[in-house]
Image 1: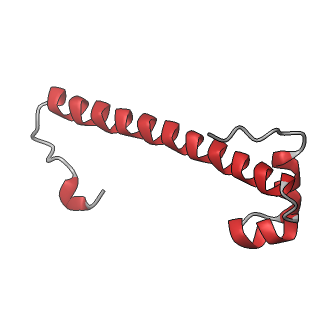
Image 2 (image 1 turned 180 degrees about the vertical axis):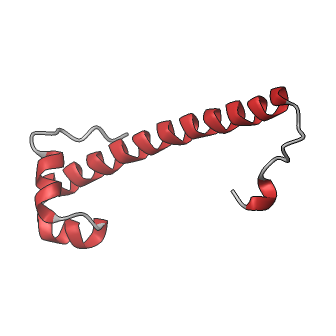
Length: 81
């Protein structure tokens, strides 16, 4: 948020609480979205490993380290739609 987005101190407490609740709801929603995207990424990595793409190639494409890919996908059966 920019300083222009901040509410002036003269605003009623109820209004400030409503804004905070709205931001909390948005953060919760974004957290759920992030978790779903991370699960999808792990499934895609697992599927690529099963197809024979090596961990170094996956690391180059995903930005993860090759040992992290191995740990994330070890024993995982990809669940792709």
